[in-house]
Length: 535
Image (tube, rainbow, N blue to C red; front, side, top):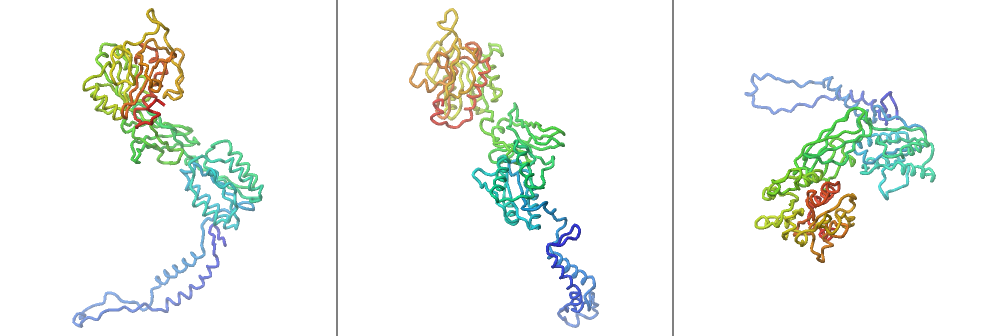
């Protein structure tokens, strides 16, 4: 190796070939150009013909100079010149290259990989070995740190890919200490930490102290403008979705786009975002029709792709369309006292509701239908609703005076006629609170307010399968919510009204949570046997 200022020759002996340039000059001058071959035509065709081009006797000087320059460049190329060669490693001993290869490194992996390869190349020029340490070690992967030659380390790094999880820097520090204790790694060494620029936990200081104990080294971190970005779970809003984007370093202004894709990889919507200087969090919103939003399967940041900037969207994120069937009795009541008003308020966060007649709503193919005190459904309407449920629809019904007097077959279980009144001058009992939800109920885990009581309800006939059909009970054991399978669909019945006539449940914070749990069945496919029994 020979250095000429910023130019370094890895094979300087190849420059001896420049001595052959005078010989090449003499050969080129002594060798005349090749004769030009022409077909001799008949004499009458060449009478009066003046030659347009003449072949010189000797090769032109500029052509000789060009050929010699080409030969000189080939000789210099064989000397393997390098402009601005890597800085020689500090200290003595092996080169320790620590690479953050977690999810935050994915968006800038090419730059980090080039930095690691440059460090390994510097070790090869210095004739020193390399210990390559990755901080996001795969579970069950190799734990021992091996000191190898630079060529093998270069091949290992070139073939490595970033992981989808966060780095474990404490584990990397422990492996370095173990290598020192076993003698596989010797002090002094020249450590280099190529960081992703994110403090994932408190173990960064522990790794830094371990590297400092090896000898003088360096830390390579991304510039603030290239710091990784993260995407929090998407938030559904009334007419689209909102995304919160975070970054580790608030220096400078940055912009980007969040894109939602369907299951086939087709983009559905894009939401732009911008970071102000000093801000580490920003919000992006976009409008998206419900039909398209329910097809969204994945969302990611376009400019900085990684596991931390990608969100997989499941069925819980989708907002089903809930059809609220308008009956004639609603016209005689105040809008704020109507049953559908309380249902709309309860489901506005978890679903998108739409009012209309039964025929209008069935044409929209909603995820669920809601009937309030519909009484007995007969004729073509009954056939349409039965067909809707059998094909996978969800029918949610609420009790009322008419359903208490006369019910139909579109209920989870047979009902007693008349209903039950609790409390009051003619009552035989006090208003009943709710019993804790069973572990196999869809409402399991919800907190029940102590002041929620029921003063009237429709009673179910005591049949053998009633326990398996009950999702919620009162304190005395009578069913409050029952559900049953009908073909591929489901029928759910609240044994009280949706307005606070029979219970104060509709004006409690528990009611929206219960409706959200029920609405989750709106887009579900055919359930298992346990789901059919309410598990």
